[in-house]
Image (cartoon, one colour):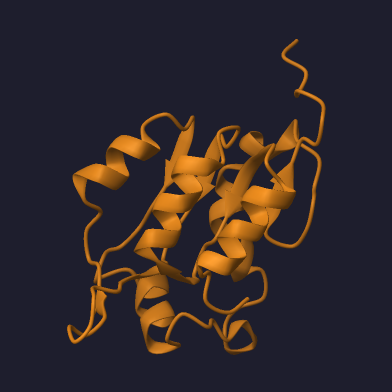
Length: 147
């Protein structure tokens, strides 16, 4: 997919404001972009940032740095979500692969079906929502049936 930057996040906020489920699994994700998503996608219920390469970009001349643990601000903002899937463990093979691939996963190098492993484990989350595109699910104008 490429880096999930502020331009991509702004497009989602503008054109998909009712987005319910978003998976950015194994992507390069900027910290300010994550905050933008959490602040502005008010209908979001499920966010998967498992195995993401989370990057913080401080003002110059400070270099970019990899965030190894989510801070209190992000956790508080994510607390409104029904589900917030994360994995940032140094011992996790998928986290290692994302870092080695610099946030641009080369899926062809790995087992077939590996790209959807986290989502398969949470399949019940996605059942009542219709597919929108390769990496996200949207309910559009309708609410999922609750009966």
